[in-house]
Length: 132
Image (cartoon, rainbow, N blue to C red; front, side, top):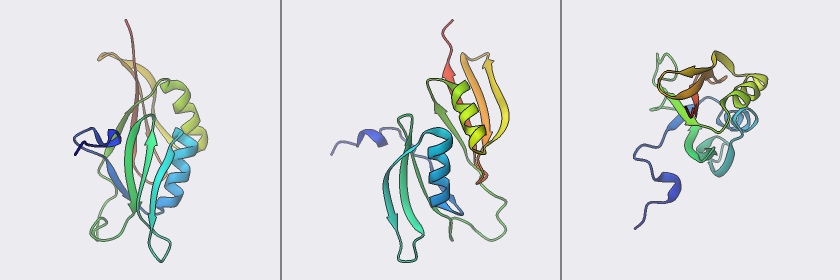
């Protein structure tokens, strides 16, 4: 069986948040995400959803045990996404309510990068390759 194109990478990020439907709406507004799958429970909570941000797949759902153990201190993932224009995406995300942790800047490893925190506590690093 061939691995589906959206899962071609060895590790697929999967985040659990309080308010997955709100997170999906935010990611669409801030990052241009498109939703392509959603499975809801009888109570309306999202059991599993999948979105795409610039050809990168992200799985997410509403946090519940065992994904949100008692005493947890919040998300422990950082998500990296390469995009065509990190400057415009950073401005769009900040306007939608993301916290800009570091503005777009040219990095010594050949990328222009910004870092943002979404309202659900996840840190996102967006990068655009720099041609020299």
